[in-house]
Length: 493
Image (cartoon, rainbow, N blue to C red; front, side):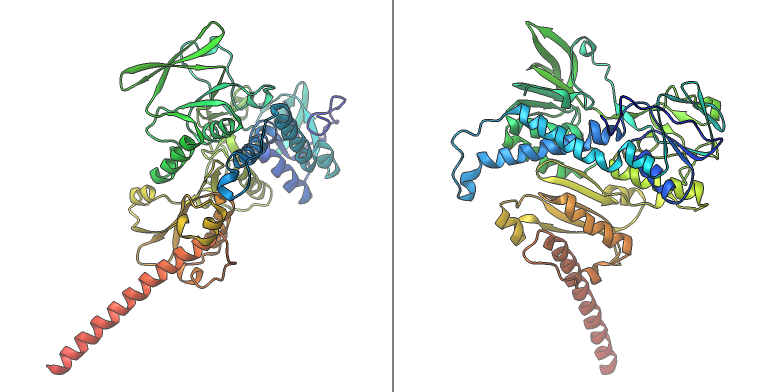
């Protein structure tokens, strides 16, 4: 708390006018403040809660800490599969799991703490901010004038209208990491990234987990074969899976929380000690006085922006979860730096041309960048995919992590890479190679000649490129053969 919201903090006396005022100190706001300050601009950063936003406090950092423990604990149970003895009593101390998470969160908070920002010259204000007019913000009653402003207020867990849910204590991503006791039975509503990650993690830690998804598959943004691999993996771990299932009510009986569900007109109850609601996120755009600044917004979609991350007020920009559909930490940071360049350096960087990678940190991980096949078809772009299964990759075999695939999508008739999906134990790392490849405009022919370390799971990317090259070379040989045949026929004639 000394780093993210000091109790004895006194807000500074504001300057007459700031080059940039940022509302929100999550990943987007922090990235923007550091970027603008290093460029020499006068910056004010306003935060109503804690520095670091959801990502540090109740999102990526705590969830990945718990997922790591769950993987270690799960591997202990499977030690015999690797020729090692199973620990005699691998008893889990959930208190120590959560204490480790808090230590990690504290350590990471140091890198973007209030003291680090003030050392850069950023004026940090704690309090609720609202626009008073097109170039003035109020922090409480304190006026803060600006030339440019950036809205980076993030998002919060989406609420649900399930009857009875508001009458029963339940968890969201904002409160799940405050638990002191591992629940014996955990019911997860929602099969998006966070729901799947925590369902699998808590199951491995020892909870009986039931996950309820109203769609026929998990992870609506991902390919069906990737989602099916994840579904099978969670089922092997012991997660009870209810797809195509709707929660129609929640009640409490004798201290037990009960989800009332319907699947194909069949009703059933799910008993739980804790309920996690994870059905998406909505932008934090209320109570900001946006109307006073002539900033258009929608409570579901957030701040309305153009290609340059500029709002309907030309001096007010937005970044991260407050305006973008892809609500990820890396997306927030990247968009914030782009907004700073556009707002303060007269750059013309277009958000629409950005290729953003993302990953769901289950086991196996599922990562993606660029176009999906169905998106290419919607845009009438001919596309061809090259797939390598991880069970054909030597390092994946030796690691005992041979579930998944690397699938690279190429514009038909060329070697230009349009997108990639990776399902693997290290997909979050492998996808970064694809990010560099696509950003640099490297094609499949050149990629096929790049030497990779051996053995490494990234060999799957090279094998996919080599598969492309073999097909390309064969097509070239066929063309040459047909041309030679025509010449021979013409000679005979």
